[in-house]
Structure formats: structure tokens, C-alpha cells
Length: 307
Image (tube, rainbow, N blue to C red; front, side, top):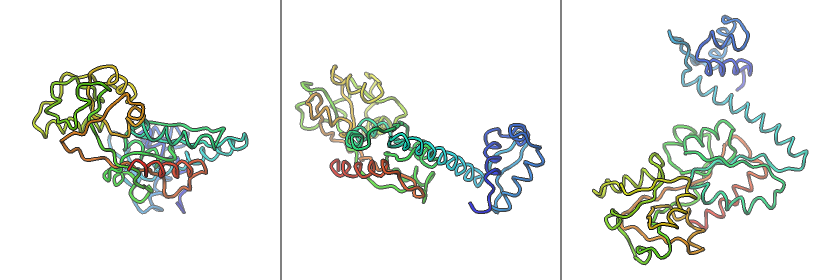
């Protein structure tokens, strides 16, 4: 960012927040002409228009949005550095913010932390759950240190091409899941047609796995289930399946613990549902902290067992 004045970057952030040069100037307590000159100087340095003025205010161009994103990331990086220094002086590891999709937070992330935490006590770690796009955006803004989410190419290309280092961990295969002793539990395979009149327990509409399930019914020519309980998070959904005759479709990784204890049973589906590939993501430009580096190492070891 050579040649860019950090103060001017802050000005651009406020313009983005307020949507108006006049409102931004008032918020910054400077004259509007001075603000306009500062924006123009940044445009000269960058060689691109950063803002478009219109009757309804000011909006950022793509170049302006990129600069604001990096400026926000810089602010967060400095706050993280200060927090790490303060925690280190108290003998703590961290802070570390781990982001994951619902599948990751319900499966691999708790397992990673169970192996990580004993070696880094006392520790400050936050786990946040969101969908792929929001997680990658949080990573780019330095709000999140490491993310476990799907390796969807369109998400990475749209948000973090060249900026995010990603490595695949495991493929999430899906199966029909029922309680132990369920009439379907002894079947070698099941088809969606076999299950069309069953009581279904499914994630809410809009979630990625629910979209895949509904699409599978549509492709097969079977109506989407109406005899249905929608439940979230996955812990609640699994408990309902354990205590009813409900059927669900989940990735095998989400029910590892229940399969081990014998409370749930998976039955392969005859319909093919393309496995989602999950990976671990971090910023290319930022060296992970010792605790984040160890988190990544453990994630790769566990991911190898899940493949």
C-alpha cells in the first residue's frame, strides 16, 4: 500500500459507511472539499476511480471496495496484535478465532480443539459458525484466523482468489440416518422412493445440505417431503432422530460420535449425491500464530482419517 495515506483510507471507509460525502465529512469533522481532495489524491495513487457520485449520494467502485476491505483488515490485524500481546503478558495462548460451516462446527472443529487445547492452556479461542461466503469474507477482513468450510471454487474465486491459502481436508459423503432399532436400520441400502412417506427430520430450507436433499428429490421425480420436522442446529436434529422414527440425510462426519456409541445408524442411499469437499483456509499474507499453526496441523491429521 505504498503511497497511500492511512488517514485517507479511513476517510474512504467512512464514505462507504455513510454513503455520502457530506455525511462522511460531518462524521469526520472535516470540510467536504478537503474530503474530496483526499479521495482524489488516493485515486491518483491507485490510478483508478474509487467512488461514483450520484443524486442519492456516493458509492464505491470495485477498486474502492477492495481498498476498504483491506483497510478494515488492517484495522482488525492491529487490534488482534494488541490483543495477542496483552494475552501473552498474562500467560495466555491466543486469541484465535476459528470459523466453520454448520457441518464443521458440529464435527471436526470440536475434535481438533479437544487435541489442541491441553497443550495451549490457558487459551482464548472463539468459534463462529456461518456459511462459506461470510466465513471467507471474515478471513479477508482479519476477523477470523482460520476457516474450515467447503472448497466451493465459486466462493473462493469471488472473494479470495490469490489471497487465501486453501487445502482439502475431507469429502463429506451423505447417507440416510435413523435411530438404532428403526425398521430401516437393518436395510443394506435405501432409495428416496423407499423413504418418501417416512417422517423426515431435515435442516432448515436455505442451508446447503437441505438444498442438495431437495434437489435430489426433484431430480428423482419424487415430491419433496411434507411429513417433516425442520430442526437446527445439528445437535437438536440428531436428538430428534434418536427419539423418533424420523429419517434424515446427513454427512457421515456429523454422526461419527453417534455411530461409535451405537445410537444412530447410517444406511447408504442408492441415489448419488456428490460429496462436498471441505478444506482449511487461511490468509496467504499472514503468518499463523503458534496456536493457529497447531490447529491447522491437527486439522490435517484428522482430515486424513476422514478421507
